[in-house]
Length: 228
Image (cartoon, rainbow, N blue to C red; front, side, top):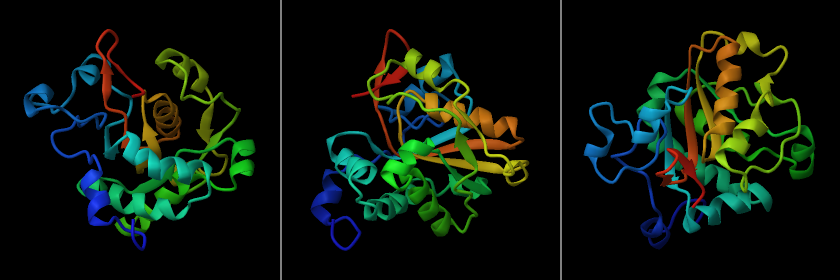
């Protein structure tokens, strides 16, 4: 990167997610025929997600991890602005149909140790570029959860059950809004599902997902997405 943007060499190495991709979960598709008339992958046809649609800027791979992991764990907060611009570009059409931006929350002890929420930084960047309001503390993790990276899809789902709610006093900001939920990576969707259900329970009109990167490999035995 140079001056907060991608240099030509870096950009050529990036695996951007462009059409065709699944409208519901954002996973890249090998060809348009795989999505059918609804532009929806087989996994989402079999198990529709609770949110309306999802979009990702990049495939989650070695290249995108070089931006996401330093942002997440090593104080490279400047990467949030870079990713925010790419996310806004990838979701240009989606941004026309949302009214409020909300980040996936961190539990308070993890936020205290990290000192910032990387999803909130990206959400603020996207909201500025799109001219949309952002409520960074709309959602709250009410209990600590294990790190999800090494858990199976089922374990992630159980771990996130009842772990997220709309923060007290923020319900009025959520009710009736078309919410854009922002996070760094979308894998099995367990965290996004927990957040979506909390937002819908609070009266959100709809929830769409925007992430920096999306895992791209499908477990054919069980139509859910797994880490690469």
